[in-house]
Image (tube, rainbow, N blue to C red; front, top):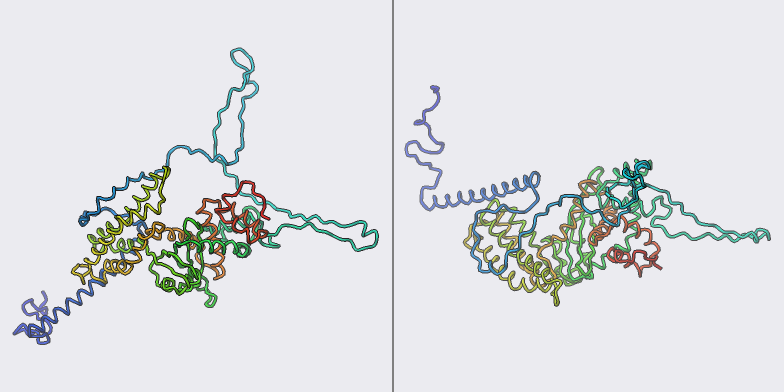
Length: 544
């Protein structure tokens, strides 16, 4: 040890008198010391909340970047509280895992088939025993699936022209008559309905950017600029807009609408080479009005849902976005009842579970009990669906929810309140778990509305799933070129999503609709909705 280094016995703390061991800057009386201790404990508590919040953010970022998006839990060894209602519902039967079956599947019967026959050579046909010619007694057929590459063809639209020789011979101006041609979705455009449908489905259904489509068409020795295809999809959207407006009317004719929104980058026209945030909204109609429509707005202000839901009355199932509050307050002109989403509430507990493992697991267990009621209702409906006097799923849900879910919700609320520090619990309000509890309690009335009507869903997953197509698309085309491009995308998303809902091939549908819509009267436009189009006779005559 260096000579200049102080020995431990000679070291002193700054501010402490070496002789008395007292720091004169600190309070010397007991109440003053207690006050300082309480202040220090409060500082430690605030720092603990901050640290937990930052750790929670880090874990969530790590999970989103490196982990799975599934919200399934690995069972924790935490006992659930004693709930007398646990035994009132049989546990749902274990679902069979989704295993892809092995072996060759039967190919669809409606696919065209081309026979390639392999016969014996002529010298092999005589019988080797008696020499007589053998006869055909059957055949063995093996089917292989072949891909026939898409091809382009040129449609020549020919209009026959008629004139009068007699008028010409008499020196009169000939009366020329030209055969009328059918209306086209894009007048004087190069693309036919089939090519337009292909570009639309590729971009908005398969999420291919137009620059990739440009290269695909080049393989067919056709050079079409992406700017030209951009004009095509915009003009097609204009032609399809009356059908889109009809779909909006259909959604608003139902008593229940699911809605959600997602951001999208849009080129900023005012600031060069920069983007701003626009918004896609989805509105999903109920089973009696099975259309899924999208809307685009330049921002996330309340004007979007206010305009779409103007004068509509019914149940609106959405997240807790404050922009809907004006709609619930009747400012849009209708009486709208808020229905909250248990999937959103559950996600809050799932995201916060690492901060309070025991409480998080119990909260998720409570939510699972609510979903068990839904599973049991579905099982009852399927079990009696084909029997005489079968009840609707709505009536079964309503009965089981009132009998089982309502008491469980009361127990869950009381348990949540008991966990808060203000009520003698151990969860701080600003901690991740405290925020999850506060979210659920603030939304509680809206979270319980679903039990009042069997036509309502326990969550808003229907709308969330519908928005996935936008999330997939923006990963590829990355941004919209303008707000007008957002409106175009909303129309095409709506038609393709509704086709998917009705199990309709969007390529075949759009090709036929684009071919017919210009000549279809407004009064018969309903026949072009995906569900009606699917149910049409196979050889339906053109609309008059």
